View 1 (cartoon, rainbow, N blue to C red):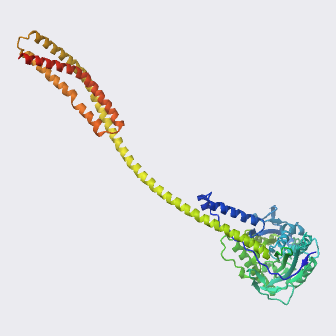
View 2: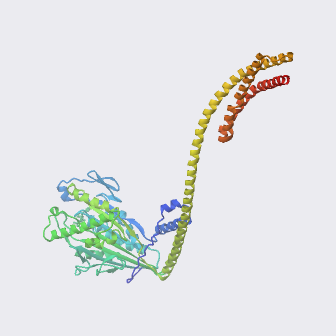
View 3: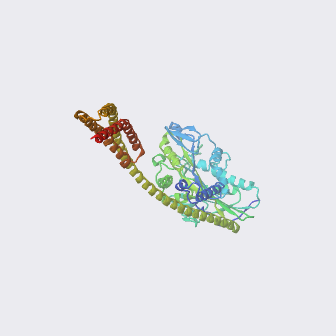
Amino acid sequence: MRTFRSGWTYIETVECTPPPLSTAHLNRCKSCDYVVLLTKYHNRMSNRKSAGDNASECAIRVFCRVRPLNDSEKSQNSKFLPRFPSANTITLSGKSFTFDRVFQPSVTQDEVYQMAAAHIVQDVLDGYNGTIFAYGQTSSGKTHTMEGHLDDSEHQGITPRIIKDVFDRIYQMDTDNLEFHIKVSNFEIYNEKVRDLFDATKTNLPIRESKNRMPFVKGATELFVSNAAEVLAAVEEGKKNRQVAATKMNEDSSRSHSVFLIQVDQEDRETHMRKSGKMYLVDLAGSEKVGKTGVSGALLDEAISINKSLSALSNVISALSHENRSHVPYRDSKLTRVLQESLGGNSRTTIIVCTSPAACNESETRSTLQFGQRAKTIKNIVVVNEELTAEEWKRRFKAEEAKVKELRQIVECYRQSEADSQKESNAFDQLVDKLKKQDDEIEEKDAEIDSYVEQVVGLKQVIAMLSVEVEQLREHSTMQAQRICELDQSLHELSTQSESTVQEEPSELMDQAISENVQELHHLHNLFGGDVFRRLADLVTGKIRTPQIANPIRTAESQVRGVSNVVSVPINHAYIMWKKYMGFININM
Ligand SMILES: Nc1ncnc2c1ncn2[C@@H]1O[C@H](COP(=O)(O)OP(=O)(O)OP(=O)(O)O)[C@@H](O)[C@H]1O
């Protein structure tokens, strides 16, 4: 047995937004404590979200329903325009529109309910808010979809099916600890006035905001119900009071937007946990081209008011579908005020766009499909509405404390990591300075090397010249050596001659010959002992320090010395001979 009672207040839980995980920081410091902690934190938060524990993003679901051609359209021979290339696409004159599902005319009321609406029952029992509304031009099938035939189980629309399902699920629950409190209200927005459909005397109810900033209709009659039959009776009651009139396009045209609100509150008697889910079932009045509907007088005023509020709804949808939405004009109409939480707020919302298939309604159908397409981009943020027990508060408080502690740790780590990166950045600056200095030094060395290279080039030229000179000397020395041999021979002969004529005075001829030989010997001595060695010694010892340059010069020097040795042996011999001869002359003079 379930218990139903009344009189609770509800508190909405608010999600604490985790600090963003900056990619810049991730790149800088992939393994630092801060990132590890923050990643853990984010993972934990997303796990909590997926468990339905807190706020989560929820896109508005949009379905499209196409009704069959009606008699009037058939009689005009209006063509059946839409094509259905896939289960969720509709094509109109070549332009495709994609929805969560497209219902073709043959789709039954039950199929529409199962695919588009049944899920809302569980959402509401889980403590979420939910909204389903039908949108479309007049006579496109909105009332048929939302309400249908109330007393015909096959042709019932969404509202009676939801009511039945809510009670079926509650009675099927296998715990006896839950206590339920269900209340319904029904009002319409007619000519920008909120009228209570359960109490026809309340014709202009105000819209106020709760302390959670949720708009609600103040003073609307709330009926406490305990079974589906009671609720259906209430729906019938409200229906009687709704503004309908016959127009050229619809015999039972709704001249107002109707809102049926079911609020399910529940309490676990053991844990004292409380949850509350609100469900808005909305049948909008249809937009109409007054030329087509042929209305005048009061009906024309209604049509103008309907179109105005629908265009306010379009503006809200349009503002919400922009990424950088700044202002959403909820306050432009009563309709958008009432639906504020359903559009961009805390509600799991489903929109069923209803269309006519007839070619004569093509432009209205196209604008309906565009409306649905825009609405599909809107994302609501939903949270479970729950009232917490003292124990639950304590548990959450502790969890929040732990979270704060964790966040403090993260902040501390972040600070530390910032300080570390500052240090790293200073060290980096120093390194950059050092590298700059090294760069300058390298540039200097480069210049030095360039000058060495220039010197090497110059010295290579000198060596080449010296080599030529050495070669010439070698040739010359060979000739000179030959000459020295001849002189040696001649001196020997002269010496022999003088020994044999020791008593005789040296002849003038001999003196001249000896003098010439001596001069020639002097010349040769100067030639081989002088300039060449000096120049080589200069190069090797003083100005040249690099081995690459000095080595070839040393080679050249030894080559010259080699030549000089070759030449100097006979010269020395000749010189000795000459000295000997001169001594001989002096002794005998
Ligand atoms: N899918 C459908 N299958 C069969 N009949 C339908 C379907 N949709 C609508 N109809 C019929 O078309 C007519 C107009 O539908 P309905 O009253 O639901 O339109 P509406 O959009 O609510 O119009 P208004 O905005 O003028 O109130 C009704 O007779 C309804 O039974």
